[in-house]
Length: 180
Image (tube, rainbow, N blue to C red):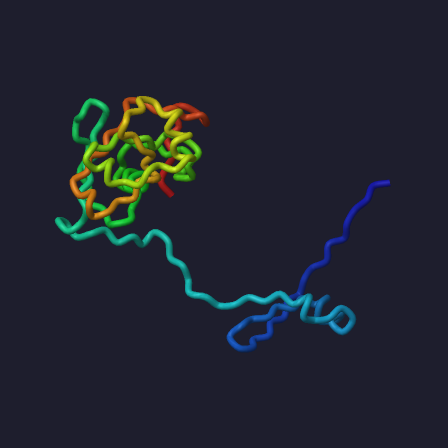
């Protein structure tokens, strides 16, 4: 004999008290005297809406300049960034071919960049996780960092980030992620 579950539909009621919305389903309302209504109430509260994708770019000439070069030293693009932006996000925003397969979670080395030595020294030491991923990077140098871990500061104005000639993507070589 096969077993099955009967799913019940839920009718919801809402009680608004002190700017909080308490949701009670039909079963909870009818059985609250037996089981204690406080333990069965589900409630939501209002909060400000978080808006994504409304990044404000600096006015021309006022931002932190960042130069992207290919592995042969050819200038790809010069962009202006805000303080706190990371190199991977900036590259994706400006259609620079920096992969970032793990989307900045420090689980790959596909956003590996080589920084100019004078700017590399301004950065904090890489974390152990970043060093582990850098060990797998193609074309590792003394000034290599993961683009997702480099956050731009005012002192980094005119910094150059050089893209390596290749990357090692454990997921699938040739896959180009799109910016969300």
